[in-house]
Picture 1 (cartoon, one colour):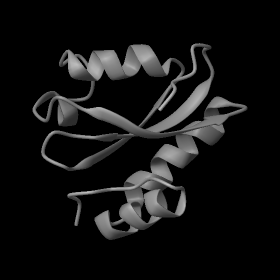
Picture 2 (cartoon, one colour):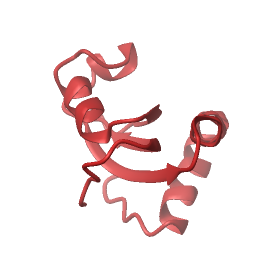
Picture 3 (cartoon, helix red, strand yellow):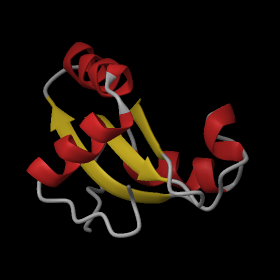
Length: 95
């Protein structure tokens, strides 16, 4: 997956080492994924490293990106997996 080098408004999904999924918002994807993997990201991902970026969307504004993050976090696990599959993400080893 090619990560954009320019700053913007992004919603992203990480696959954690324990095969859980984490959704977040950022303006710099590269920096944010690096911080998660250094243990400087969210508490949730700190204990589940390494993480892998598996999906992202860019938005025109912060509000829309944060809304996408909120909506993803409200989903059940099975609904999150369906969302990712619908968006072309192949998830092996996830149930």
